[in-house]
Amino acid sequence: MRLLICIQSWFSNLGKTFASCIRILLQSTFSNILAIKFNQKEVCLILGNGPSLKQTIDTYPAETLQQFDLMAVNQFGDTDYFSVLKPKFYLLNAVTYFQEETALSPLYQNLRKELYKSLSEKITWDMYLIVPFRAKKSSNFKDLLNSNPHIHAVYFNQTPGEGFTCFTNFVFNRAWAMPRPHNVLIPGIMHAIHLNYKTIAIVGADHSWLGEISVNDNNEALVHQKHYYDEQTSRPEKVQDYITRPRKLHEILHKFYLSFKGYWDILKFSKKRNVNIYNCSEVSMIDAFERKSLSELRKSQS
Image 1 (tube, rainbow, N blue to C red):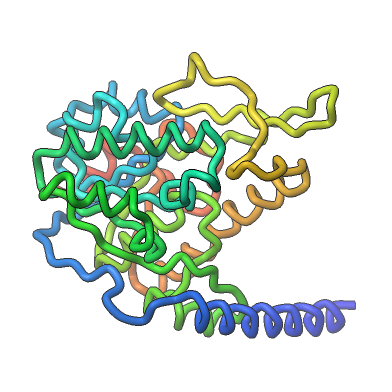
Image 2: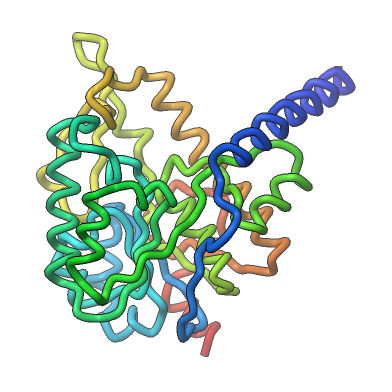
Protein backbone atom coordinates (compact mmCIF):
# COMPACT_ATOMS: atom_id res chain seq x y z
CA MET A 1 0.00 0.00 0.00
CA ARG A 2 2.81 2.42 0.91
CA LEU A 3 4.49 1.75 -2.45
CA LEU A 4 1.25 2.47 -4.31
CA ILE A 5 0.86 5.75 -2.41
CA CYS A 6 4.43 6.75 -3.30
CA ILE A 7 3.87 5.91 -6.97
CA GLN A 8 0.60 7.86 -6.99
CA SER A 9 2.31 10.84 -5.33
CA TRP A 10 5.17 10.74 -7.85
CA PHE A 11 2.82 10.79 -10.85
CA SER A 12 0.73 13.51 -9.20
CA ASN A 13 3.82 15.69 -8.73
CA LEU A 14 4.90 14.94 -12.29
CA GLY A 15 1.56 16.17 -13.62
CA LYS A 16 1.63 19.27 -11.43
CA THR A 17 5.20 20.05 -12.50
CA PHE A 18 4.31 19.73 -16.18
CA ALA A 19 1.19 21.91 -15.77
CA SER A 20 3.20 24.52 -13.85
CA CYS A 21 5.82 24.63 -16.62
CA ILE A 22 3.08 25.39 -19.15
CA ARG A 23 1.55 28.09 -16.92
CA ILE A 24 4.94 29.73 -16.32
CA LEU A 25 5.79 29.76 -20.03
CA LEU A 26 2.41 31.28 -20.91
CA GLN A 27 1.80 33.61 -17.97
CA SER A 28 5.07 34.63 -16.32
CA THR A 29 7.40 37.49 -17.13
CA PHE A 30 11.10 36.71 -16.81
CA SER A 31 12.67 40.15 -16.42
CA ASN A 32 12.20 43.29 -14.31
CA ILE A 33 10.60 41.28 -11.52
CA LEU A 34 10.47 43.28 -8.29
CA ALA A 35 13.04 45.69 -9.70
CA ILE A 36 13.62 47.90 -6.68
CA LYS A 37 16.43 49.54 -4.68
CA PHE A 38 15.78 50.89 -1.18
CA ASN A 39 17.23 51.35 2.30
CA GLN A 40 16.29 48.22 4.23
CA LYS A 41 15.58 47.68 7.91
CA GLU A 42 16.26 44.35 9.56
CA VAL A 43 12.67 43.08 9.70
CA CYS A 44 9.75 43.27 7.30
CA LEU A 45 6.43 43.32 9.18
CA ILE A 46 3.39 42.39 7.10
CA LEU A 47 0.07 43.85 8.27
CA GLY A 48 -2.72 41.36 7.59
CA ASN A 49 -6.43 42.18 7.44
CA GLY A 50 -7.67 40.11 10.38
CA PRO A 51 -9.58 41.62 13.31
CA SER A 52 -6.60 41.06 15.61
CA LEU A 53 -4.60 43.70 13.73
CA LYS A 54 -6.52 46.35 15.68
CA GLN A 55 -5.39 44.71 18.93
CA THR A 56 -1.78 44.76 17.72
CA ILE A 57 -1.97 48.43 16.73
CA ASP A 58 -3.64 49.32 20.04
CA THR A 59 -0.95 47.42 21.97
CA TYR A 60 2.11 48.77 20.19
CA PRO A 61 2.56 52.50 19.50
CA ALA A 62 3.26 53.67 15.98
CA GLU A 63 6.87 54.40 16.90
CA THR A 64 7.37 50.73 17.77
CA LEU A 65 5.79 49.42 14.58
CA GLN A 66 7.79 51.88 12.50
CA GLN A 67 10.98 50.22 13.71
CA PHE A 68 10.18 47.63 11.05
CA ASP A 69 9.72 48.00 7.30
CA LEU A 70 5.93 47.76 7.04
CA MET A 71 3.97 46.08 4.25
CA ALA A 72 0.26 46.82 4.03
CA VAL A 73 -2.27 44.94 1.92
CA ASN A 74 -5.72 45.28 0.39
CA GLN A 75 -7.95 47.99 1.92
CA PHE A 76 -5.51 49.23 4.56
CA GLY A 77 -5.25 52.54 2.72
CA ASP A 78 -8.88 53.32 3.57
CA THR A 79 -8.17 53.34 7.31
CA ASP A 80 -6.81 56.06 9.59
CA TYR A 81 -3.86 53.80 10.44
CA PHE A 82 -2.46 54.21 6.93
CA SER A 83 -1.37 57.84 7.25
CA VAL A 84 0.00 57.21 10.74
CA LEU A 85 2.10 54.12 10.02
CA LYS A 86 3.18 55.13 6.50
CA PRO A 87 4.05 51.63 5.20
CA LYS A 88 7.03 51.32 2.88
CA PHE A 89 5.34 48.59 0.83
CA TYR A 90 1.76 48.02 -0.24
CA LEU A 91 0.75 44.80 -1.95
CA LEU A 92 -2.35 44.23 -4.05
CA ASN A 93 -2.97 40.70 -5.28
CA ALA A 94 -6.67 40.23 -6.12
CA VAL A 95 -7.48 40.53 -9.82
CA THR A 96 -10.49 42.64 -8.86
CA TYR A 97 -8.16 45.62 -8.38
CA PHE A 98 -7.18 45.47 -12.05
CA GLN A 99 -10.24 44.16 -13.92
CA GLU A 100 -12.41 46.28 -16.18
CA GLU A 101 -15.55 47.70 -14.60
CA THR A 102 -17.86 45.41 -16.60
CA ALA A 103 -16.14 42.32 -15.15
CA LEU A 104 -16.80 43.29 -11.52
CA SER A 105 -19.79 43.30 -9.23
CA PRO A 106 -20.80 46.71 -7.76
CA LEU A 107 -19.22 45.71 -4.42
CA TYR A 108 -15.76 45.23 -5.92
CA GLN A 109 -16.09 48.26 -8.17
CA ASN A 110 -16.71 50.39 -5.09
CA LEU A 111 -13.88 48.80 -3.05
CA ARG A 112 -11.37 49.54 -5.80
CA LYS A 113 -12.63 53.06 -6.32
CA GLU A 114 -12.37 53.89 -2.61
CA LEU A 115 -8.90 52.39 -2.25
CA TYR A 116 -7.43 54.08 -5.32
CA LYS A 117 -8.85 57.40 -4.13
CA SER A 118 -7.26 56.91 -0.68
CA LEU A 119 -3.87 55.99 -2.13
CA SER A 120 -3.94 58.92 -4.52
CA GLU A 121 -4.84 61.49 -1.86
CA LYS A 122 -3.13 60.24 1.32
CA ILE A 123 0.38 59.22 0.28
CA THR A 124 2.96 61.91 1.04
CA TRP A 125 5.95 59.57 1.42
CA ASP A 126 7.68 57.31 -1.10
CA MET A 127 5.85 53.99 -1.17
CA TYR A 128 6.39 50.89 -3.29
CA LEU A 129 3.12 49.48 -4.63
CA ILE A 130 3.73 45.79 -5.36
CA VAL A 131 1.28 44.48 -7.95
CA PRO A 132 1.03 41.63 -10.49
CA PHE A 133 2.19 42.29 -14.05
CA ARG A 134 -1.45 42.24 -15.18
CA ALA A 135 -1.82 45.67 -13.53
CA LYS A 136 0.11 47.21 -16.43
CA LYS A 137 -2.95 46.65 -18.64
CA SER A 138 -5.36 48.40 -16.26
CA SER A 139 -6.32 51.95 -17.20
CA ASN A 140 -7.53 52.58 -13.63
CA PHE A 141 -4.16 51.56 -12.25
CA LYS A 142 -2.30 53.74 -14.74
CA ASP A 143 -4.44 56.69 -13.64
CA LEU A 144 -3.53 55.94 -10.01
CA LEU A 145 0.20 56.00 -10.77
CA ASN A 146 -0.11 59.26 -12.68
CA SER A 147 -2.03 60.87 -9.83
CA ASN A 148 0.74 60.72 -7.21
CA PRO A 149 4.52 60.84 -7.81
CA HIS A 150 5.21 59.17 -4.43
CA ILE A 151 3.76 55.87 -5.64
CA HIS A 152 6.33 53.59 -7.27
CA ALA A 153 4.99 50.47 -8.96
CA VAL A 154 6.86 47.18 -8.56
CA TYR A 155 5.65 44.15 -10.50
CA PHE A 156 5.58 40.42 -9.75
CA ASN A 157 4.40 37.10 -11.20
CA GLN A 158 1.42 35.55 -9.45
CA THR A 159 1.68 32.32 -11.47
CA PRO A 160 1.06 29.22 -9.32
CA GLY A 161 3.96 26.78 -9.12
CA GLU A 162 3.39 23.19 -7.96
CA GLY A 163 5.07 19.81 -8.27
CA PHE A 164 8.39 18.35 -7.21
CA THR A 165 10.12 20.32 -4.46
CA CYS A 166 13.31 20.72 -6.48
CA PHE A 167 11.24 22.27 -9.27
CA THR A 168 9.21 24.61 -7.04
CA ASN A 169 12.33 25.80 -5.24
CA PHE A 170 13.88 26.60 -8.62
CA VAL A 171 10.95 28.67 -9.93
CA PHE A 172 10.19 30.23 -6.53
CA ASN A 173 13.79 31.35 -6.19
CA ARG A 174 13.58 33.21 -9.50
CA ALA A 175 10.13 34.69 -8.69
CA TRP A 176 8.69 33.06 -11.81
CA ALA A 177 6.00 31.43 -9.67
CA MET A 178 4.75 31.07 -6.10
CA PRO A 179 2.39 28.89 -4.06
CA ARG A 180 -1.18 29.48 -5.21
CA PRO A 181 -1.90 33.08 -4.13
CA HIS A 182 -5.41 32.51 -2.79
CA ASN A 183 -4.62 34.79 0.14
CA VAL A 184 -2.76 38.08 -0.05
CA LEU A 185 -0.30 37.03 2.67
CA ILE A 186 1.17 34.38 0.37
CA PRO A 187 2.57 36.86 -2.19
CA GLY A 188 3.31 39.24 0.68
CA ILE A 189 5.63 36.78 2.42
CA MET A 190 7.12 35.50 -0.83
CA HIS A 191 8.07 38.98 -1.96
CA ALA A 192 9.49 39.92 1.41
CA ILE A 193 11.79 36.93 0.86
CA HIS A 194 12.64 38.13 -2.65
CA LEU A 195 13.40 41.59 -1.27
CA ASN A 196 16.14 39.84 0.75
CA TYR A 197 14.71 40.18 4.25
CA LYS A 198 16.13 37.52 6.53
CA THR A 199 13.46 38.07 9.18
CA ILE A 200 9.78 38.40 8.29
CA ALA A 201 6.91 38.81 10.74
CA ILE A 202 3.17 38.80 10.16
CA VAL A 203 0.39 40.27 12.29
CA GLY A 204 -3.35 40.38 11.76
CA ALA A 205 -3.28 36.91 10.18
CA ASP A 206 -6.33 35.53 12.01
CA HIS A 207 -7.50 33.20 9.21
CA SER A 208 -10.48 32.23 11.36
CA TRP A 209 -12.77 31.63 8.38
CA LEU A 210 -13.64 28.01 9.16
CA GLY A 211 -15.83 29.05 12.07
CA GLU A 212 -17.52 31.71 9.96
CA ILE A 213 -18.96 29.46 7.21
CA SER A 214 -22.71 28.85 6.89
CA VAL A 215 -25.23 27.69 4.28
CA ASN A 216 -28.59 29.48 4.00
CA ASP A 217 -32.01 28.05 3.09
CA ASN A 218 -31.28 28.64 -0.59
CA ASN A 219 -28.23 26.36 -0.36
CA GLU A 220 -25.91 29.32 -0.81
CA ALA A 221 -22.57 29.07 0.98
CA LEU A 222 -21.78 32.17 3.03
CA VAL A 223 -18.57 33.31 4.67
CA HIS A 224 -18.43 36.01 7.34
CA GLN A 225 -15.07 37.56 6.47
CA LYS A 226 -14.26 39.91 9.33
CA HIS A 227 -11.52 42.52 9.04
CA TYR A 228 -10.04 44.90 11.58
CA TYR A 229 -11.87 47.79 9.92
CA ASP A 230 -15.37 46.22 9.69
CA GLU A 231 -15.57 43.60 12.45
CA GLN A 232 -18.70 45.20 13.93
CA THR A 233 -20.48 45.92 10.64
CA SER A 234 -19.58 43.00 8.38
CA ARG A 235 -22.01 40.19 7.68
CA PRO A 236 -22.00 36.77 6.01
CA GLU A 237 -21.73 37.10 2.23
CA LYS A 238 -21.53 34.85 -0.79
CA VAL A 239 -17.99 34.49 -2.09
CA GLN A 240 -18.46 36.19 -5.43
CA ASP A 241 -15.38 37.83 -6.89
CA TYR A 242 -17.01 38.52 -10.23
CA ILE A 243 -20.55 38.96 -11.52
CA THR A 244 -20.64 35.24 -12.32
CA ARG A 245 -22.03 32.59 -9.96
CA PRO A 246 -20.93 32.51 -6.30
CA ARG A 247 -18.52 29.82 -5.11
CA LYS A 248 -19.94 26.54 -3.86
CA LEU A 249 -19.06 25.27 -0.38
CA HIS A 250 -16.54 22.70 -1.57
CA GLU A 251 -14.85 25.38 -3.70
CA ILE A 252 -14.57 27.69 -0.69
CA LEU A 253 -13.08 24.91 1.46
CA HIS A 254 -10.65 24.00 -1.31
CA LYS A 255 -9.53 27.63 -1.51
CA PHE A 256 -8.91 27.64 2.23
CA TYR A 257 -6.99 24.37 1.94
CA LEU A 258 -4.71 25.86 -0.72
CA SER A 259 -4.05 28.91 1.45
CA PHE A 260 -3.01 26.92 4.52
CA LYS A 261 -0.99 24.48 2.41
CA GLY A 262 0.70 27.45 0.73
CA TYR A 263 2.17 28.56 4.05
CA TRP A 264 3.84 25.18 4.50
CA ASP A 265 5.26 25.45 0.98
CA ILE A 266 6.59 28.89 1.86
CA LEU A 267 8.13 27.54 5.06
CA LYS A 268 10.08 24.91 3.09
CA PHE A 269 11.26 27.54 0.62
CA SER A 270 12.20 30.01 3.38
CA LYS A 271 14.50 27.43 4.96
CA LYS A 272 16.33 27.08 1.64
CA ARG A 273 16.82 30.86 1.68
CA ASN A 274 17.78 30.96 5.39
CA VAL A 275 14.85 33.23 6.18
CA ASN A 276 13.03 33.26 9.52
CA ILE A 277 9.27 33.80 9.41
CA TYR A 278 7.37 34.53 12.63
CA ASN A 279 3.64 34.68 13.18
CA CYS A 280 3.21 37.53 15.66
CA SER A 281 -0.57 37.74 15.30
CA GLU A 282 -2.57 38.05 18.50
CA VAL A 283 -4.96 35.41 17.08
CA SER A 284 -4.17 33.05 14.22
CA MET A 285 -5.11 29.67 12.73
CA ILE A 286 -1.91 29.47 10.64
CA ASP A 287 0.07 26.46 11.89
CA ALA A 288 3.15 26.70 9.65
CA PHE A 289 5.22 29.52 11.18
CA GLU A 290 6.80 29.82 14.61
CA ARG A 291 4.71 31.92 16.99
CA LYS A 292 6.37 34.88 18.65
CA SER A 293 5.09 38.15 20.07
CA LEU A 294 6.32 41.44 18.65
CA SER A 295 7.90 42.18 22.02
CA GLU A 296 9.90 38.95 21.83
CA LEU A 297 10.86 39.71 18.25
CA ARG A 298 12.12 43.18 19.16
CA LYS A 299 14.21 41.76 21.99
CA SER A 300 15.74 39.12 19.74
CA GLN A 301 16.70 41.78 17.17
CA SER A 302 18.24 44.20 19.69
